[in-house]
Image (tube, rainbow, N blue to C red; front, side, top):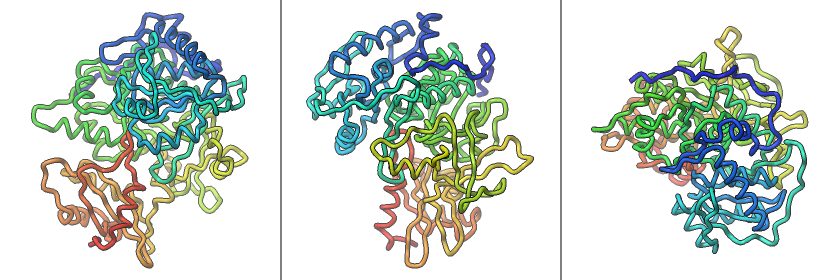
Length: 528
């Protein structure tokens, strides 16, 4: 079905020159101008902008009573719900740092983050998450119910916590985001109010968001994409956030068909599973109000993109970013949708350079991507040496990703992300980019999605593929290998293909390649 692609009416979408000092102030225009308009929706609960403002002020007062002060950290063990937004904005009111982490993380990870962040308080969104409740009970937290915020658990204050310095301008740290650790140990990224406000305003303008929009919020707000690009951007525009604790394709389909959703954010794995659900007998995918479908967080596959656009009749937009950039770096444009899987040109305000061996490469050549701009992080918490490795004295952030930019004469100077520099596989002297192999595998009709990693063997590297097949199909590694021989050069064909019921992934759907590399290294004898 072809969904409506008409843009809502509104004023010119140019960045405001008078951004507020703190992120909680982004709702002020809507509190004064449309206090009764819906800000948050969760199940049957609708919270207006006026109610959100009151709930935030009350939560700030109660957090103060519990001992939270400016410069303190509030660890929020969460899945998407009203308390996440209220407590985030309350922290901003108090100049405290929000430290959101996903409730589905292990006990070890939660305990590590509590200790590393030095959190004064820890809250748990137990009303919507059994995992959050389990963590709360394990740590002796008590259940509270605050006006507007609702029911959640709160642990006793940590008397050993020490506040960090506070600055008056928007260089004050707003959030401490732990990276997912898909390619190594997690790091704590300090993001300022300026960082987050820059992304919120860019998102409002680039997606032309207005109070008429309804944003389906299923990406975890504990991750930077969900927090800044999805949630803060919507609130900055006076739009409504439809909060969903977890991804469920049937629930997403229902919201798209009858919930008035106009903007959907997702990672490629989410879209792949939604399309797979839509192919089941008795299922259907319709989205009469949807005007923007946005992808990001992982490489977009051409087959997924083509299938999505055929089903919904609108472009599947692509973007690229990283936690250290708050996260947005590049974005395809509404007025110039791409047919390919480019992530689009850099967003306004972001500078890029592509370098190899210390020098910038010519247009069209592959190199390591460096970025600079208002979204670049303050640094890694308690890790100044890691910060200096990532961001140089001139403010350039080394993304660690390999990229190329369209040559002169290209459509819009768009970027193509080739892969992680550390993930490049060198097989018999040839460069193998995992993304290229993954796209070929994902083209098979019996594949939901896959991941390709390298494995060191004496004197060489091998290509290993992990594949999640469509349920009920009779896909074999041998059949898939034959398929790939028609589509890839021989040196790119995986030495080993493993079929898994589910690929290991974070809560956002990002595949945990570090786990797959460990699996590949542990079973070299199984290679073909």
